[in-house]
Image (cartoon, rainbow, N blue to C red; front, side, top):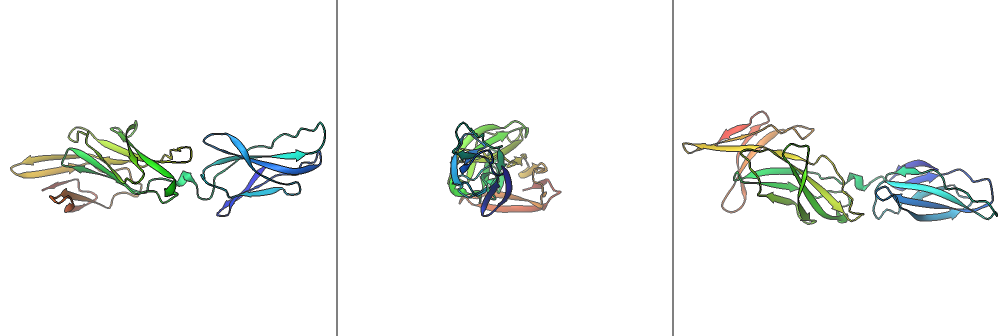
Length: 239
């Protein structure tokens, strides 16, 4: 068996003819890579040597094999080799589009995200992870599928750095699609003679770099006011 192509019409598979005996048909089996459990996907007549799989309730990497159905006595054909294929649009592409973290009142961090555009209807919830070294991440919260933010109140912004990852959990075997969804926040505030000095560290996570930093302040109505915008090489302001 071999993989011929993958496109928007499906996964195109083919195999060589079984010649040891008269073939009445071929059975195609498929398994999710996450489970490895094969089930019968479809059967075709004996004169067909190809099949297009476009039945993706949970589009993710799949394993395939084909097995001939024969009518000869004492002939027990073996299944073919395994083929791995990923649909044209797959759950492996279901990653967070944006993750932003904002320090609030030097006492908590609000992390916000947008729902992935790839199969959003399959998402069950979001798992939030936190790290202080960008290496070891600990699970801290589960947010319902309609949620787009999480407020972390258990932080010490004066003495620690924080990194966050938000991972969508979907209904297809609850697969966690991991990726580089982290956002880094290091912010400190010191007040002297009525002037507050805000300092922050350089953001190094985003591959495209930082265009500018925007400092905002929460007002009494619960909305954010822009205090100041500075270029990518500025890391402190006085308020």
